[in-house]
Image (tube, rainbow over all chains, first blue to last red; front, top):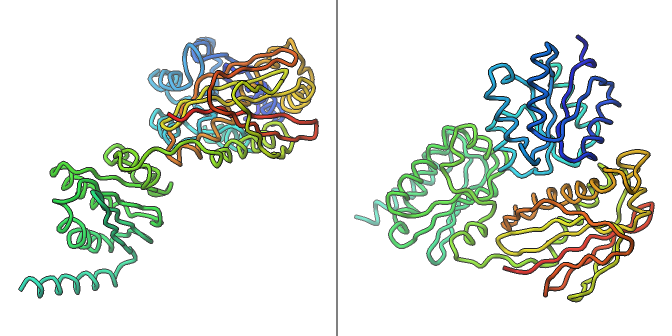
Amino acid sequence: MSEMNSKILVVDDSISMRMIVVSFLKKMGYSNIHEAEDGEIALLMLKDGLLGDDPFQIVISDWFMPNMTGHELLEAVRKDEQLKNMPFLLVTAEGEDKHVNMAKESGVTDIIVKPFSIDQIHAKVKMILNNN
Amino acid sequence: MAEVDEAKEQEELKELEKNCQLRMSVEKFDGYIVVNLLNVFSFDSARYFSKKMEIEVLRPFLESHSFFILNLKSMGDIDKTCLREFVQMQIRLKKQNKRFFLTDLNASVKDVIYKNGLDKTFEQKSTVRAALVELGIVKKKAFDVTFLNPFIDAVMRMMEVQCYTKAVAGDITVLKPNEYPPADICGTIGLVSDSFNGAILLLFKEDVYVKIGTRMLGEGFQPGTPQFMDAIGEMANIVLGQAKISLNKMGHNVQQALPSVSYGKDQLVKIISTSPSILVPFTVEFGKFHIQITTKNR
């Protein structure tokens, strides 16, 4: 499968932030993009992808969300035998060391701090998908 | 005899200093000692460090002083083997019920400490002042107008990176209590910190907001769409997230609440506060908007 056909899950409770990330991904050439409003829905979609033999290749998630936060989603993914190696790109407004360290301790693949440009997200997504 | 020994020790110390890159200076204050480390703490500096600490810090001040601060502001890098010196210092001081802080660590030093699983071993503070605040030796800083800069910088960066427009800050105005600038749409985030409580507001007239939102999210950005109400909250989140990085480095420990959004033609968003608010105007290619910062010292 080519990198451009990678199945991508964008998770954010903010519709505007999802719109920004999705539009950047489309401009970068990705087309198989799916959206979730919180961690709970995202986890269900990740499971559904596995059951349908059509797994996601990367999760791009916000940190603070209602119901299930990005941190809780990350922990759930890392604990799940089938999902534990899922690349997880965190997009957050919280750029302080304590948050970055917490995310690293929980096994995040990489972090982007808001505001971010298309070039920043392009470089991170491309590197993650190529490594996997 | 004691004088001879001291002279000999000083000679040894000088010899050790010659053979390493690390430099140290000791400052004595009432109740606390600050040891400033300069240059690189490489393997060959370990003996110099321990000798200097023994002769000039621990022996003369361990009994009389309660707090010991290692200020790493001017230290470039540290070899991981040298972390043992800090651990041994921590053990020695802990046994005597003394407190030990590391301050002003750069990213590289923090990384070495983190990678060796020692980030929770040491009490780390962003500055010597922040450590002294923690110890109750100096008072917490009150919010003053100089702390506006992180907010102003954050707004300009957010506008440039996420909204593709350049924002120029104008002269600030201090609003009287019960004075409220009119706006059509407002995003508000509450702030709690060690030194002040308050709120930050993003205030837009509808026509300017629609043009900025269209630049950020594309065509179709209009009242009644979900993104219209959502984007301003996200903008406020981004601004505060950026500003917090700088404010917390100053020792304010700012925490934020979730944003709220209000929309209505020429509404007056009333923040209940007896303290004056600060209003900062910004000009973009589409017109003007404002941020309002209301704080009350704790």
